Image (cartoon, rainbow, N blue to C red):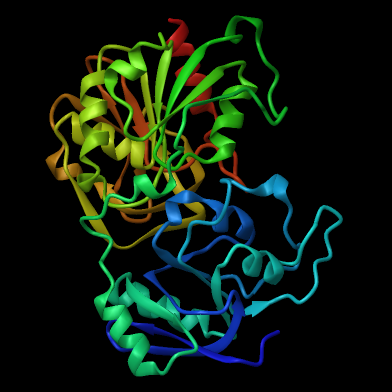
Length: 367
């Protein structure tokens, strides 16, 4: 594609050469990798990638183009995009725009022709870290990377949340709606919610009211919800103090369900602790065991922090574990039944092993 030389420079001084794609300019963010073979547009538009430069480990991206139907948010929020090879054409009948044109239109700085295997191995060995991407001299990019604020300590929810409340009833048509489920009212706290989460609830007949991240418990309860959902989102959960306070205020007042950041906020509200993973879990192929059923699910994941199992209070039960490293993937409050999972059961682009969790929440609202 591009013939303009570019480079990605990590804060530890490691340099990866490539060619510029997408929008012109320089960008900084936390360098992370995701292992999905597909779903690059969902990655681009997932608000949880805010402040991150995402390396795709699959060798070619863009061969199916882009379509507005696959957006998980209103626009890309990630800081930059790294690929080994960018396809110059889009072969899928659903495509309305090439990936390069999509990146340029949304102002996303990117780089191709990078040795993404070497970058991924470096991040696995040395950990996710800040980086800079652009066509500037190496020394300038290194200075930018070193000066960039790290992810730890950052509350990024204000960058991605809705500014005004809104209603959502648009499903995907993937599930049959039971009459008994119709019109269950779920209040969604938007810390960076993905559209497919909203679609999954709508497919089960729920009507949704989406509120900004700074909504108060009074704001939530005034809408008389049958249940409250705490969404995914970016940043350090321990720094998202307003979310922790809201979850704590709502426990026992309504059924609660959290995904990813929402799961972490719920756990923190109930006395748990969180910590930063060395390089995080990102991709569509993570094995998780449901400890309540004994079943193993292949899950979609996107997080750099986790709930600390060693510091789990007696009031919280661990319900799911990651089979690769044993980290906590789900909790449930023994008294109120509030629960959360670290992975993404809505799974756009897939897999769909864990969608039963939406049904579990609806059943609890109706209990």
